[in-house]
Image (tube, rainbow over all chains, first blue to last red):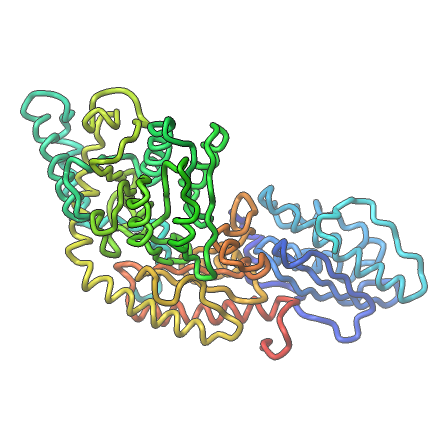
Length: 137
Length: 393
């Protein structure tokens, strides 16, 4: 049911792990739903210098985390914020319809991590535009 | 199987490959012996005799009389027929049906449909092992109850139900008793008279017979309506030209399974016990289903902190076929209703894995599976934010 790209990121996840002295951490999902995604970012000069993830979930959730972290690494914070779930799913060469919410989860986890970073640095958190309340705790 | 082309099939509760003797027995009835059993000429007679022979094989395997055996298109049709047929034939006596929360969807979706037709259905709870209490059955029976339907063994967790006691209670109270024996037949002893069973469903492909074949046993005393209307086949009770090759196949497969049951079930149960013991050595792993009253081929466990679809995908990459009750692997995104009924919380159910052993499984396979399951569980736990530090590597 998954393409080769998804399976590659699932079996060989990029950026898996934690960052001890992260500048921002975002966690979304809940165990009842079967998926939790946690994103750690390290920011310097407004650039996502490093990013790591931890995920509890299905193949699509793990692959989405891996792909999303790869897509924002080395990018300006604003550009990382603008990464859409669709871009993640497209980069994975598609996800089955019932698994698209996994890519939404990745987008949300990045947003949470970025706003955590902004709040810690005395900046106004940016406003979420999407309404994916299903996965927010 | 060994070497680079190693492929380990541990999903024998889903289906099994048809055995060679079965395929060979079926083949002539697809070509040279193609006659319709209802016709009168010689070639048709061969087909009719083959069907009669299969009927006798099935009857003898479950302690029934051949007149009580009806061939169907599978376990699902047998369940639908038994339940709908009993419901509509006994409508003048009452409208209440008793079943359990852990039945197969072939039963549960049938009773749910009957609820829309005005029937009332009691879904009995189960204990933490997935077992129905016979006393609960007794207490649920009212003067409006027309049918009790409880599975003989559960397809997900392997728990064997106290069918003899339930059958006795139903008989005493004068209520029809149906059991879905799809996972039990050909694997454990089944005797319809000893167990006081009025109707029993069987599926051929669960014991190395062909897919698309099933049986409904209907005891002499059971009054039920047909499900399929049409020709006079199966003594006017199940219309449609007989699937002669399939019927030959299910008869042969069940006969062989019952003949080999003592040795084969013992061997498979031995492998099961080794597999359970070794997998439970992985920390934070728990067995689902009953520890003793359990199908010989069934292993079902949950691993905390990880999700089942990921486990299956990784096992598949390592050439191991298995199954899970996780919501994420189902099209409906609903977690297993069986594990829910056993009282497991959804976050634990997501980490479930079912391995069902078969005829081709060897002790070597068990070692390979254990080693790979251990590796996959650790890999996923390393990835999971829920895993406590002491379980990370």
